[in-house]
Length: 205
Image 1 (cartoon, rainbow, N blue to C red):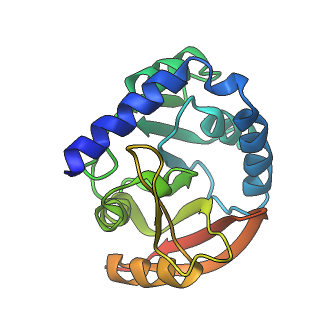
Image 2 (image 1 turned 135 degrees about the vertical axis):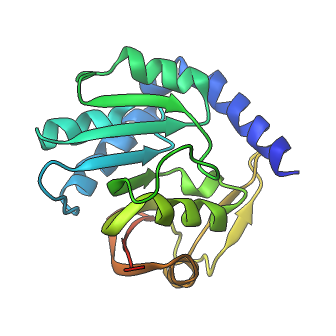
């Protein structure tokens, strides 16, 4: 069942990739990214991971925001990754690869920060994603989850998006899931309308 969902989601975003940055969603993401950059804390020379990186806009902005930053973008959609690679402004610092957030081919305790922007709602196995995030984060590293959390959602709330359901998680549910994964909530910040940024920290092993 999960494999079918991943295939449907990959197909959806492959079809969307070619005009993803030409739609109104691009304006929305720009606004979310600007507010996100005002709410994060990164160490010197950070190595960061962007899960569900899409066309790479966030990593390009992060690299421009902090000149000593290096990073990796992962996305389920090969066509999204192709768009990201073509638009990569700093290929010497940023790389992009196709991958699935539930099974990352990455070393343990490898990143200073992990980002998820309007992506977590698509995951059929969110607990496994959180476990992978915790695994690849350095002790004390931060996980920045920015996604929809409508005030009416007691969460997790599941909505049908054609054949590809999406899920909204309330602040309380985010905290419960994080605790089970070994992540501590640092704070919640409303970025834009119903988009909530939750900053987590990897607890000491």
